[in-house]
Image (cartoon, rainbow, N blue to C red; front, side):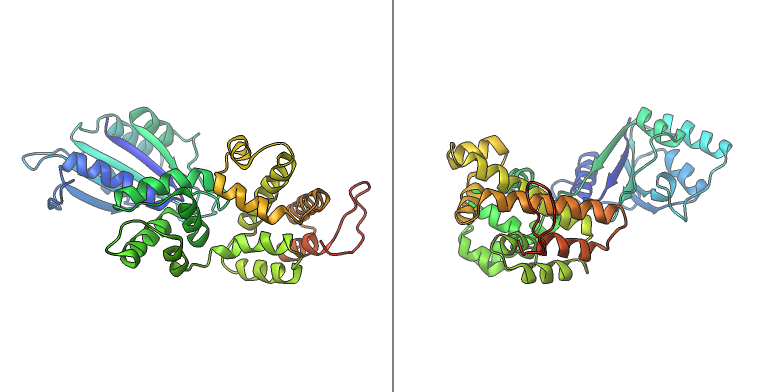
Length: 342
């Protein structure tokens, strides 16, 4: 039965999935026009309008696609739609009887970093699950390059562009993990390299981007430029949640620590395969780690773990805790702070 509930904070993929359903149902993949009789959008409709949509019947105009924003029905919000038991039962009955030629797409877009999600215990959620399909669209984290890389490669191919893994990794580090931003970056690169279709590292450098700051932070810490690292974190906290920054640093230094250990007995290729990174990223990490000893990496990991505890326990504000983690040096054996810099 054509009933869907799409939710999550990766809006680019979510919207592409809706477009795929719409193109297939309405046969518009080749740029055909869409009649307002066939494609209708509703924004958290009241009970009556929602029921009318679910009970819609196509006539001579072909299939109908309803895109219905429904976060006030499925998410816990201060402005949620309140339904009594009778209304809930009517909606459930209507969901069970949706016409095969009426495609109901319920959406719950979520702001990036927001932890809201549909309540799977609710009768309405279970009814959608039984009648159709529920799918989460989760945004990637900054440190999930290995997951983003194959997707970006596919996006580039669809745009008619070519690039090796090294160049694609540069794009991710310049642009960030949001797929919409990466898609925009590819469109800009297409203009930059025209009439060629192979993306070069020089072209990526021209692209610019602010996201490289988060990668810069770990480099600054490794180089002992701690005050600059704290400054970058302070700037990023104005527009990014501390958990995103902390998670990136934790993941980044975990990979660096593992890479350092494996480097004694393994090649960059084997390390990449073992840790799920790409070979280019491992080679770059090994270059950075030439002058960094294992003890320093362990200290950094310990300090970041301590910062996470202090923030989540409410003992310190995020910036203060991260500043202490970067500026303090803990002894490996007893964990007593010596007050020195990393």
